[in-house]
Image 1: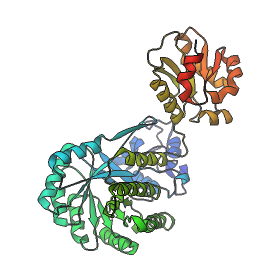
Image 2 (image 1 turned 180 degrees about the horizontal axis):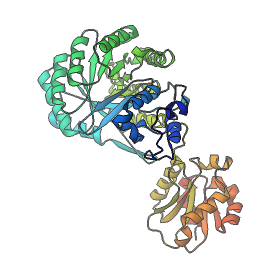
Image 3 (image 1 turned 90 degrees about the vertical axis):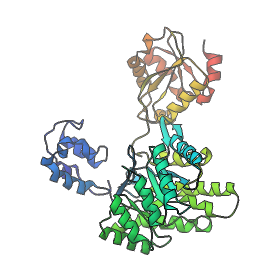
Image 4 (image 1 turned 120 degrees about the vertical axis):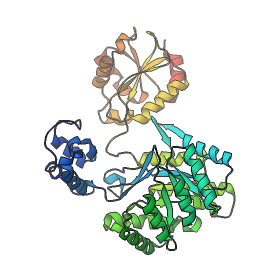
Length: 464
């Protein structure tokens, strides 16, 4: 973590009961994993009791993130933004992925509003074993009619489980929306130099997080944050403005300088989550397609440049897929390769004569191979060998994929009980191991294609 902490610093404050309720052998192991951010503080059950409350508070003071974590809630779901320990991913890892909100407006007919809300909630893309989804609904007031806005928020609440961002600079309109967001904590967007007092009152009254909006003015942003903190409002989100067109450089510079001030200069007034609004691309003159493209690349830039939440408009897959996949790749732990469980997988309805193939447990490799097998409608077994999350090339080069490992996997999977033949198809990129695998396992090796897309043709021509 960003702070220089030793496991001993944590261990001194733990109950030292070695109760194993956290799933680890002892309290020192828990302290070590806590410092490495591989386990949460709540995993220590004794710390949740009143007896150790003070100790828990002291530990939290030691390990709490540099960046404030803000929670946006619906009655059934919550989205966490911020809460980061490091400025750059390679320093440790990022914690809370950028939350992506798609907007609806209060001038939409009710049936169109419900249809758009359902599309936002149901948007999903399967990627290396995960379902990537959108996180929030941004309800924007374009009518500035409190009654209209309240009705829209009510309809949204009734038709989605996603948390909301309520968007208006008019406190009366905002109050109408908040009154319909029952049992929720939507993000209020936004307090400005003109309405900060009334928006602050609403944030305090409804116990909701509040966005501070000061376009291209970091000094004003800090001033408003200081004022809100003095009023006792701690759950804040910062928006320094998102400027399309010629303003892109200023946008990225502001986001970077704010985040740098938080982590490198310990500026507590800027140590809050950042929200970007690529939706501002739609304020530009020009073709609709150009606006869609500009919104898409603005979103990508801001995901890379520290945005903790985004508001976008375009709901088309070609625009959203790059955003959610980029986000997924950035918000993975760089210390841990993305891997799947090793073992045997069954495709189709294989029998005792069906082919046996193997691949590594690197998630991208596995799901690519699995997709090619499924598209070819093959009935086969796939042996997933534990290579510590490395791809075939890397695993062979790093000696994580060896003939011994393959032979052990064959034995442990008990595949010999499922088929009467002793033939295995290995990845073409592991061809150098073919002789050793035959020697260690006793199975005949068929060297498969270099790319899994060639599996269907290979099996048709080579498997007898």
